Image 1 (cartoon, helix red, strand yellow):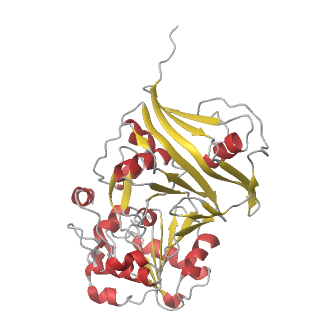
Image 2 (cartoon, rainbow, N blue to C red):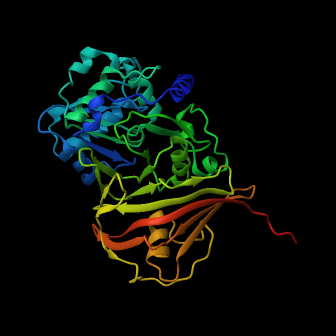
Image 3 (tube, rainbow, N blue to C red):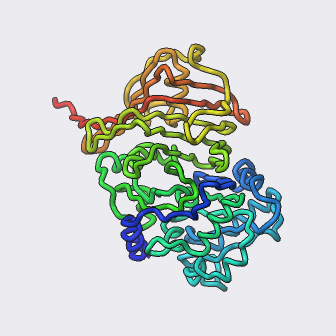
Length: 417
């Protein structure tokens, strides 16, 4: 499999992004872009997908990304039926790269060519929705598009159904594929310190190493998606990816959370337990390898219940009350980072330590490796910045808008005796 995926990345990285059908710009459908690790009982994420479904037509589960395709398809089916989808509407489209060790009577690795089988595709031609499971996003791309960039009959159908008003959802790998360019692997520290992109070879490289990218499936025509966002500290890698993709917008989707995009209106809403981080890189300046790696990005962060405009990144529905001028905290900050520092999540840092803290206008967080190479994330409150505090499902949540964001690189020298 490693050799196959290496070949696909080499070929696809050299190609222009495969074009969706011409009418895709008039999409009437909905995208449910989930950040991974979605709980089976997450009524908000699965409910958003179900509410967007047209009344008629099959609901198609696409397990192409999974190493256990049959099992992952069953898990999705169980959640959808638990939240009210009639089991008779559900169908699994049999496309996969690997055999599922949990099944004895079927070899799922024989499903590799099924996305190109027009007779099979015709069986779901009236689909109301498609859900892509998690796993390895390169498996999806390699199974649904040819080496030359040609769309399979299945992928063409999904674009057509999306244009007609269907819903396309996916989690983790199923979220990464949504944008026209796609992040395949790498960690933030390596992406920023050693910014040269490399070829993706195996799923193990999703978590660490150099940034790798290729063409996505283009359901979301604007911006770049990253998933498992805050837990896996992917803010830095998204910044580097935006530069490589020459993209103005980045959308970081937290785990157990989804960004629900109404394509006709260009508006997005947030559901689930985490947040969506929106990076506006329209005026960004990049200097690789540094020391001033990235400058003049704007960062906004939206919790569940928020709605925002994709074209501007500005909020349409705000959760909570303003904090600026009514700050709850007034504590001084120590520049640094690591386990001994409080407020580790992006929402906590920008809320508790910056926009809801009258004693601070700037927040610096450091990351340092064993060789003394350090990254400094700098968040600045400007006249355009705003913060809001409220409760969502009983939990304290912050909305953050238009914070200035920069990344510096420095070398740290240990003191000598």
